[in-house]
Length: 272
Image (cartoon, rainbow, N blue to C red; front, side, top):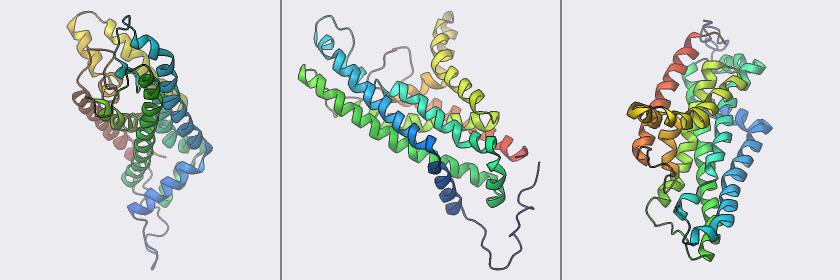
């Protein structure tokens, strides 16, 4: 591994201040928002999250109000956030893999030799962005979708059990998912491979795991990242076999933290 600290050209230069953590966060913020993919990813997050929620509420409101409905209207007010997960995964992956793809990671580590600070700064920028964007998108989808539900007399008040939690939980889950993808991206260092792994784990493996026989299959399925963390983002879960919202999110947070620690260890030991 190349010791980037010893290669710091300013380490013994009088009057030159070493970059602090605030400087590193600012640098990561500038890099993050300087590429067009960030803007388009956030825009797609909003379109998918809020737009699909409004659309499904508009087309399902009459059915939900009928006696034939077997689903709670509350299960639909964050429906589009399931698809907004894709953009969170993309942003989490790209925040690290693009630097390896372009070789910019070497300039980043030359300017900020402390790799732990670089990784923490990326996490702060990514988490803050997805937390705010996810929460705003969830509220926008709820307000737009609930308007159609209100017209059928089945509107969902924000004060009802689980609704406000799902609004904030949407931001929390997307932020966690972005960090999970960032850790995988740091381990793989390849955009397509990291995206494929995380999306397959969340959308394919998570659903297929419930087909495993016996109670052990159900237990494994509950602990998979998407199944464990996603419950916090819905007022009423579509799947009663999942863990409770906060319990599941705690499991998901622990899995993400473990993966980030592994990514940090590899990041410290591997050449840029």
